[in-house]
Image (cartoon, rainbow, N blue to C red; front, top):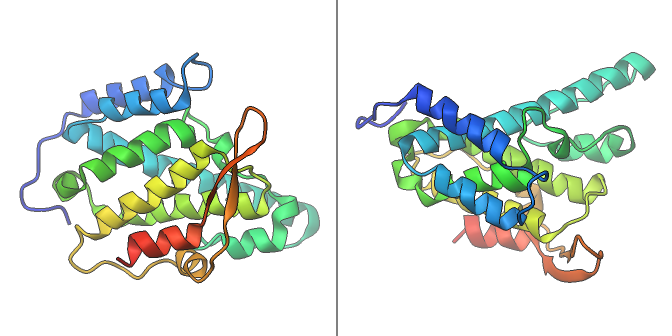
Length: 231
């Protein structure tokens, strides 16, 4: 249920914003990822921008889920082996069948990229979390934020996705925004199993420079989750 002080939306403006965010930004553009993400974030200011930001998060998670479902179905057709795809916890799936799966977040259709549109949308949502219940239902958004975090960190651990500064930034922003969304909900749901599993761990992953592969830092997902979600 949305809050009582609902706002009037402009569907035409929302579609125009979403089209601009899809087409104007990407790795075909000669500009740093961080600069592009910041420009997208500024475009998503205002209530219509927040609706678009939430749509980006939902669409990215939905498309990733469909890609994983398709891979699982293809594996079953070819081998008879059936995989369980659980949106609340992808980790068991990847532990069981990582060699048969391709990480979905770099293959999203529709012009969305996790380090550009998704990172920017997540940041915009977190910056204006106090207004979210006026424009969207925060509960489904919270689930999709945690789903994207699960896919991001699972890719590092099981799909040989190299952790770079953009990926590390995305992961932290997803959790930070999720916490801000939780704070807007009177009776928030339990944390998903994937998050609880990582919170019990204390493993640091190396963060690599994408240009030369050198280690430039580290990120401890479990410590980040505990710090952000439990304090």
